[in-house]
Length: 484
Image (cartoon, rainbow, N blue to C red; front, side, top):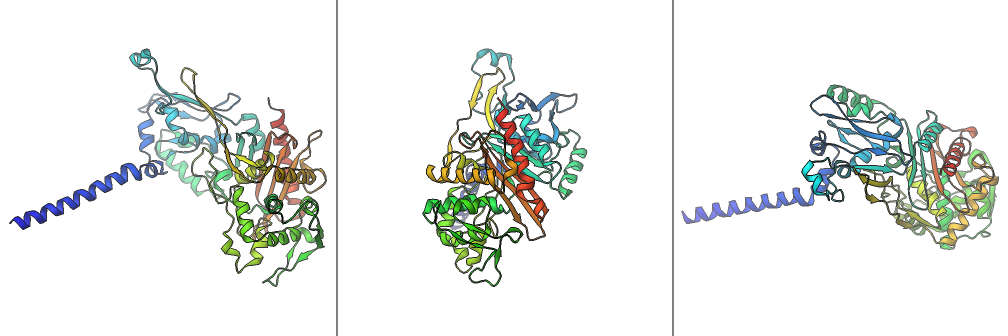
């Protein structure tokens, strides 16, 4: 009998220990992951009937607010600007949780952030609502110009202040109306959700920071910077031969220049005309180890720490991928092969060159104020990575000025303003190209950096990054520089 009791006791102890371990795992180690999981709506259920603060742009336009309604929920989340800011605000849905700023700053908006405190006895006695309002770094005017520039073409525009990392515009097409997901009619919400997810255009996807694409020749800014930083190239040496195509080792198929053109020369010249053969050779000269390390310095293979949820990291292959595949290294140096970048990442590349080699943490929150308009939190700019030394950044900046002044980026010229830029036309392998333009201005004292990407454009000379994306970037820069 004693042995049976002892065995039972041991079994119960083991079961209790297992239960204890699992409870600690769920409540401590896995709590953050489970709370942040997209299908976990417990937080939204808890918050849905409570007061919630507003979200507004830096120019004072309310883009998310709660209005009183006569139903069981008492308050309805409303998005007055509809699709324009959907990929920034996200949505606040009883059925499908929350997204975007609604998710990142949920605790502030609901008043549960520890910084949002009731410091007056009268607030407690009167049971005043305790919420906070979030002001963003984006403006309606610039967001509208960026969106209009896409003109119904699938793509993205990112504008950022390179000095602080403040996002000035974050535009995608297609977008969606978050009001359809905030409705209190759950049948309508589910129908809207099903339609949005069935749409081949993927309107729910914030392409700017979650989707990756071949960056094409816009990536040559990174290759040029790495070549200078490692001493593989200077502004005068080597002088790359003038070629129409480059025969790659381990391959019977040559790498060609865009449109069958011939090009060569020192680094400033080959960047100005975006010479594939020269940059492919440069990538092989740099080598896999240094190329990968230099690219990682720009933030590749890391998720940019933007204050929006579920961002994607841009990718440059590990050096081991090139050990038996030298042609892949050559193609990676011109932004093809297995190189993939979000539009946000390429905006950060431009911003890093603009900011003396330092890429600042990107962010959309400017400040948080409580219901009495008292400041609770104000964003303090901070560095993310140091991409290259200042002298390298300055040299690349000067070459990018040449791209716009007398090269493939001429359509981004602004009268009276020096603009630095780089075009990109990335072949998809499907008979189309992703067209890019990255830039910043004024080049001597940059206040705005921009990345524009248009998906799957026809592969023809009139559909290049310089022809399609550069004019959009120019218009965004003009508007940003004119803003107070």
